[in-house]
Length: 226
Image (tube, rainbow, N blue to C red; front, side, top):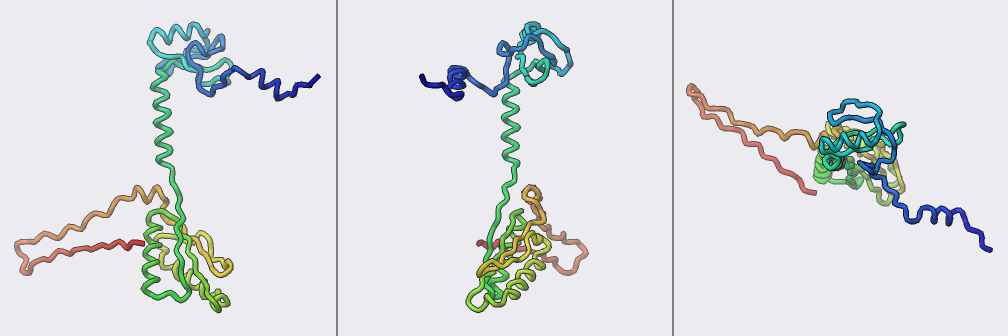
């Protein structure tokens, strides 16, 4: 005779039963009495479930079990369809407001040309303004590996020049043939997204008494693509 394992007993016990995490409403509420909250939020008190259902039917709404673990369970009279819609809307808004931290990476050579250095520094500033972190890596070639202090000085020089937009989150650290530093943004991602665009510069008005013609300044901006 084969012995039946505890797992098999549990399987046969649960087979055919539907386990749902959804809130119980109306005639699905099992408790004989509930602590009732009215549609307007008023505390009705402890009443039988049948009376609570009648009160909900009178106003054409649902009886919803909002705290099943309480003794007795707490139920509220409400529009359950509208309630589920509002919960879904709040969850959607919460997902939209989540900040996604992105770590950009910029690589430097130890003997980088000044023009390339300024170009890459501009990229780093743009990333930091957008609320992203930046991983800056200095790569050593050949005998340069014996001069890690030069890479350290280069990274610290960079950190001082971009201090307006970022700070050193992880100090320079040598790893094999490279040295890495991580910069964090001064503005968080959400703050950078909400920061209003700068107002356009309006040229000064020409006055009647002016002898010379006023020439307005034209500000040109150019975005450096990576």
